[in-house]
Length: 345
Image (cartoon, rainbow, N blue to C red; front, side):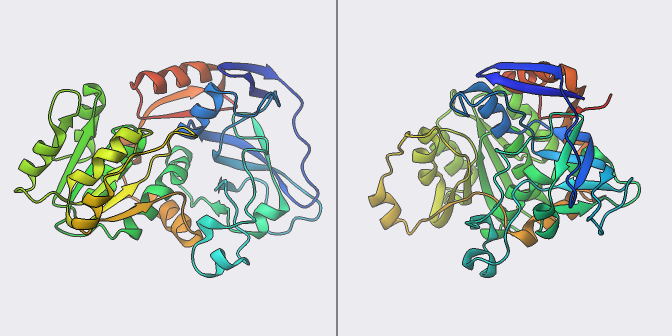
């Protein structure tokens, strides 16, 4: 089969390698669609595995069952499946309390062979847990592949209860910022303000319902947000980018008693200096957000494949696996919102 093997930072080679054997108690999936995620991008551009190469990344996987193991009884050859990468044990305290995103026993998808390949295995453990979803007839594999990035956005906005009439600031207009913009409008936000330094990316967010755009390299962000919110500040502020400077500034964009979310991960070791006195005297709530609970994963999948969600607007590029480097470059340049690769083409 063809696979995109990472041999080191920025060293991705599409090669012919043996097709993995089907586990006797699992499945072999023929990959139809696999998105390039921001975390995949970061992993492929740095020494993510400390020299333990080659490795195949890719975790936004949709495919069709090609083989079933002799002990597997639930699925059949020909069924189309979406595989959520972080299978949760459903038995530990975080899982049982509704916070399976913090499961201490979840499968480590970065250690498995990923989906940037013609075929990928699905283990018995993944099947027994909460990570496998059947695609209904007529649903696009590309749309279903958006379920994974959408899940964390969905969970974040549900957790902070973005609701009818809210004003929301989203810092960062990458793919995740676009998801946040669309979902906030779908949840009834009256005003969504997007902050970004790239004019091209800013313009893209109009497609998803952004009401106001601020280029933070050209404008005073704090003054402009206050102006757009009648001097109050926003009800909710989501910092969806890898910048500690943006995190530090985000607290000044929220109203008294408002909510600030640190959604985007930053480089390891980078520390954010916060004016905690400002947080204290303005009654701000600050949340960190990562992942999604088991039920939120399911609901995000159902939303992604529904007629209510404009999946086609997010997918700006579809490429064969052999053009993965082009997909990486499109992401790095900011030209793409979502790149979906099609192995087996």
